[in-house]
Amino acid sequence: MFEAAELGRKISRADFDALAASLRNELLDLQFALRTADFPVIIVFAGVDGAGKNEGVNLLNEWMDPRWIVTNAYGPPSEEERERPPFWRYWRDLPPKGKFGLFLSSWYHLPLMERAYETRTLAEMDERLERIIHFEKTLADEGALIIKFWMHLSQKAQKRRLEKLEADPLTRWQVGPQDWDHWRIYDKFTAAGEHIIQRTSRSHAPWTIVEGQDSRYRSAMVLTTVRDAVARHLETRAVARKVEAELKRPPAAALPPPLANQPSILSSLDMTTAVVGEAYTQALQEQRARLARLQQKAREKGVSTVLVFEGWDAAGKGGAIRRLAAALNARDRQIIPIAAPTEEERAQHYLWRFWRHLSRAGRTTVFDRSWYGRVLVERVEGFCVEEAWTRAFTEINDFEEQLAEHGIVLAKFWLHITPDEQLRRFQARQTVEYKKWKLTDEDWRNREKWPLYEQAVNDMVEKTSTRLAPWTLVEANDKNHARVKILTTTCDALQAGLKRRKK
Image (cartoon, rainbow, N blue to C red; front, side, top):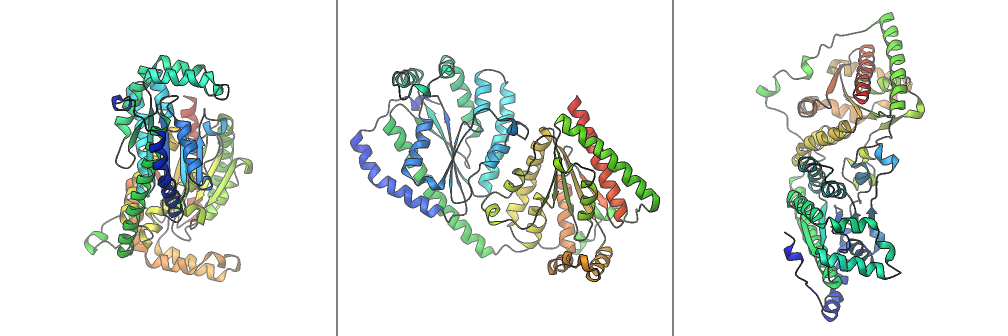
């Protein structure tokens, strides 16, 4: 694979200067056009030590306006980063739409090192690469342009490069013992690199192998590849926006009567279930005390908890969250209310704002509404095209799988009430002064679309209730029953998570 990058290609200074005269202006013009585009540009540099990865990053910052470039380089994860899933730090650092993001020693670094040093089997490496493929596909499906450069040198050229850097007092610091260790196992590094490229070079995120021996040739390859890729993507996205505008994102359609009249997951619930009187008071106190004890153990053991609350308007999410939160130490829990995305959030992938809120080890994060808005509100109201919300099921499952694999306890609740009960609560809110603010015109509009939302909820549960992240459907016509069930389920999930951690 790398023979074509060991041919000793060179570009004369005169030829490079002639190319540079127009190339820099073209890149700046594209960068200006990108600022109002609906996608970011993500550029990954990987490859052989000394082949020009750092120089490539510096070159792009020098030739373009660095104010619209975000550069990220990674070392071993910090304590804060180790307390979250591995991809948390990459999601956190993603560039917003309209900017370039440059990444050094990023998500390919660990699989490469592990395989080169033979601390992982090839099968284990492929598992890591599969996660990377999903990550890049998730970003590309939302419009991101991903450019990946594998910077290459032959073993002889690498040795000359390292010796040259060591000989210069100004660059000696760039070479350490690890660089020479890597040179000694060059064949293992290139074999691992070849496997990475073969497995992860996809149409949405292709690799470009760059021969790094001649600095001018290397620079020309990087700069022209970026120029051509950005120009093509700007044109492609412009066409896609035009087509999407013509489609006008039609709202979801209801199922035809023969299908709509079939039993659903929600219709199978016993909505008469209730807990009353002293039984409720006692159960509430017992489960609160149990949750407080379990949360203290989770804090000591570094086990995090993520609780997701979805449900009909007026189903009692807020009341259930308040009663649950009362059992938790305020220092160790955070409640995240999710509304329409802010301007900052709209400039990112829709999952970004949820990744950034993941807490450190031992804490509890409660999402009042969540990432399921993509397959509920956005689907029903036509805020995103069908292609986007249908692929979101896979993206959400992948996200939740990463949480579970990291040892995070994840519990998801859908609070279900009947249409009649919702109407009764709406009417009650109109007469209670301190509850009037809860009832909006949007609530009434959503109520008119009950069949569409019920269809969306059934699809959501069917496609995202997994072994690692099951849904708990809560019969919430009786608020007492709902609160006790939520507390009990949370305690059971946390207890099971602590047991897994102990093992």
